[in-house]
Every structure is written in structure tokens, then in C-alpha cells.
Image (cartoon, rainbow, N blue to C red; front, top):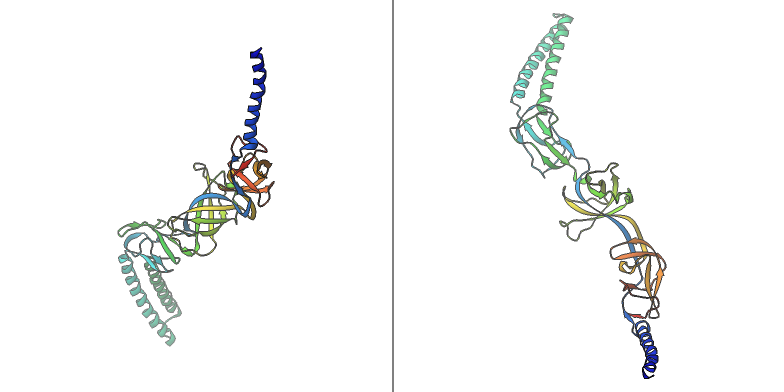
Length: 333
């Protein structure tokens, strides 16, 4: 009888202990949580890429005459002006031919002058006059052609800019069409960026781009998407995107830049820590208790996430909520 009586009292005591434990968990002892207020601020969705500065319209320099190079007058990185001499080819042969042609032109011109004087006095025929005039014109034209060819032995800059590449040395035998130098105008520089093919559908012409480099500490270079190449590189699974500068920039050609293309931006968005959002809901603290709310999100970043509906400015959300958190549970931060 004593054992049955003890057993009859033991069950209520166990239930009371369990109930007390639940009360302490849910109502008696608040769970410690980290909270943050819903704030307003700018939200931007970015596409990350890497790029480099290059000339928008690089100019290839070559010669029009086959001849050895006597002298190269510029180095890579030198600034040059339009019309400036860059390369001088061996012109000894051309100088000799020009001297010969100039002498012949001078003789033909003197003969022309004598025949014209005789013709004016009636001592020369019209045929003799015409032959002398034609011979003198041909001699002068030949000398002019050789003079022009001699000028071609000096290769000159077609634009004002910077020498980007030099692939010629004194003594080289150069031929027409062979690349000798490459020039670029810093005033028309641009950035070519490589964008992953998964991100390229979000990139559009005109979108803003923010660029930085370890070589430019603390400086943010602003630009915009000016061109997207229609064909991608299947080996890299990427597309090339051209970015123009919003204002003239004095950046060296070849400088590597980190590029962030702004694909979406909202200036006055509701923002919560990204760790507060999970599976389309957040936990909100109301009167010291945790309450879950369904939310619709917009731009999602590493640190902050935009909330389009379900919250109001000033609400306090739980950041990285504990997995065991339950609806209505008392919490404190």
C-alpha cells in the first residue's frame, strides 16, 4: 500500500517538474539574442569583375618601304605628337637616286627654258617646244616621287599619344604591314572588364561602375558600361565589357582594376542585417517576445538585405536567430 501511494504522488511531481522547466524556458528565463533595428539607406546590387585600362583606339605603326632600320627614336611609355618622327630607315640608296633625279630634272628644266625662248623668237618648232616641256615635267615628277619615297623612310606618328608597344630595333629589316610600334591616346582610354557568364544577363549599357586598384589607394574611379561584346569566351566562360570613364582620368595603360557594376540601386531602402533573413522570414522582437514575420526581399548583399514588405522602419529584428527559437518565446539582447 505504501508503494502504491508513493507511485500515485510521483507522477504529478514529475509533470510539475516538466511544466516548471518549460515555464522557465519559455516564460521564466528569456533567451539571449542579438538584435538590430530596421533602418533606411542605399541598397545596390553589384556585379564584380576585374579589368584593365587600355586605349580605346590603339594605332598600329608600320612602314610603307622595305628597308633596314637605322634608328628608333622612341621608347615604350614616351609621349609623342602627331607627325613626330618615330623610326628612321636606311635611306642611302634613296638619297643617291634622288640626287640623280634632281640633276636630271634641273637639266631638263634648263633645256625647257632654252627651247621656250627660241620658240618665242620663232627659231624652234611647236613640236620641239612640246617635247622639251614634256621632258622637263617628267623629270620633275620623277624627282618629286623619289623625294616622297625618301620621306617615307622616316616613319611618323599618326596621332598624339603614348607609345604602348615597341617591336623594332635598329638593324631590323622591316617590311610593309609588319607591326613596329603601337600608339594610344590617354584622352580616349577605357577599361575592358571580364564578367562571368552567370552575371552577364544583369549587365546593361549605361549602368554605373565603381573601380579601384591597389595602385590607387583610397581612390574610386567612376565609369559606365559603354559596350558589351556579343560573343563570349567559352574557355573562360566570360564576356568582355567595355567601361568608359565619367570624367577624364590619368591612369596608366595596363593598370588592373577591380570593377563593381551597379545593376540595381535604391536610395531609400529598408535594410536589415543579412543574417536576420532566412527562408523568407525574420524574427521580430515585440514586447520582449520573438515573433516570426514573412518578408519579401529585394537587393541582397553580404552585410545588408533590402526588405520590400513585412517590416517597418524601427522594428527590431533578431540577427542569426538560434535554431531552437520558438514563437512567443521571451528574449532579451
